[in-house]
Length: 553
Image (cartoon, rainbow, N blue to C red; front, side, top):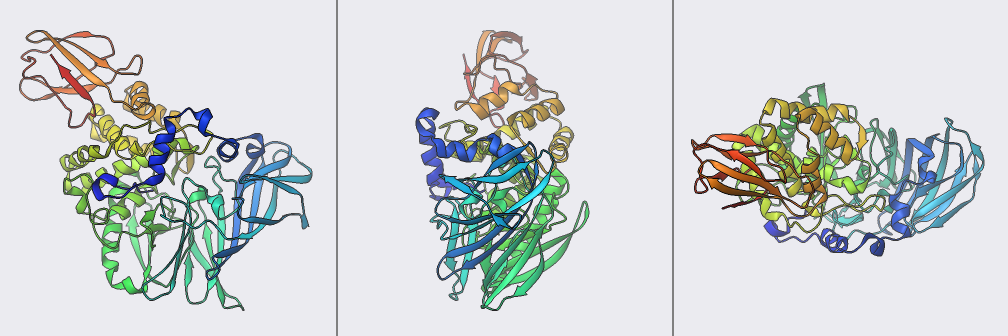
């Protein structure tokens, strides 16, 4: 997802601000049963592993009404006779069908509990179907709030999209709504009025003319997909197609743009091809060759919907024409194409198990913007962009959110997260190794769900640097550390980190008397360091690439 650039562009990310304020309160005071039912992995959710969905939904645009069904195919992880799935309580569960018969269910908040007539034994493959209907929540500021975005294009044709990251996919379709369990594959069948078409994830395998003035579009997704990425995009689209010669061979690239904007397609083609080239270099092959890569024009700004990226940046470079870094580098490419495509690797390929670790998605993807710049304009430009983005950091609350209540951390997960990865690259000081780490993450965790410890452990192991305290400081705390430097005599210094993290240690680069970089390894205890030729007057720390405070006396 993109971040609302409130400082750079005068946009306000209301939900992030509200949550940041709420985090200042104790968790027990602000989280309730509904939050736990949505965010916690109880035995009623872990007892089954989703294998396949067939979502079949009809969209009545005039009434803003949806109706349909979702088939759940699953494997029993444990023996059970009751499970939980999720659907917002403003939508009706019309029937739960099992082996041709309706079975009982109950609801609590947005959780639905299904009672089976017999126990389902561990290891068994089984299925049930949920029939549902209703008027889904209408998004007022998509994509920063969730639901259906009901709009019309300039010709008065319907232009409708879904966006539900954070709020949850169960805002519009029944599913096991937890990021830890990605469905292996699915079929998305959507019926819409004949005057428009629907574009969803994966590949279009069939269109079906119905008798009631509707056409049904069947989209097959062959790769694992997290729930919030499943999307509908309904509009009067023109379709363009090309093939990208990627690392794994030919990759189908599709563009669905409003017919009125067909003449602007070259902008998308240029940015998409450049983005794929840069990111396959840094992260490895595009993770969803089987499903292809698509950009789909939407009325809202954008979202990382897997293999069907929502695009609404109005065919211009920058973030709606602006550059939050104020360096100029952000205006040389289309922010939404680059940022949302970065999520195909970090967010869609590698997915956080709990929304509290959404920083994994956004920190790496924020940093992917800098890597795009690095690929085309060089490392110095990349680092200038990261440094410029610091101006948007609030240091209001940790970028990691609480687990088990479906809450993300501070919006600092974007810019502060990007700063963190740039610092780690700087500490390693070996770009071949850094490239290997980024590509290795996408190989080791290919199509997997991860948590804080997975990312920390891998990056520490592969970098050869114990990053425990660095991650704790920048991911789990609010403040930044200060490097304290005290001159005893010319060339002799007492140096330590002042940090709220006990035992904090982090390598940092300083400059020697000739202006060459050298790495020192302070801890939270004063160390005597002999640095020939340096005095407190000429002692310089690399504060351009390290997001730290420095005091020298």
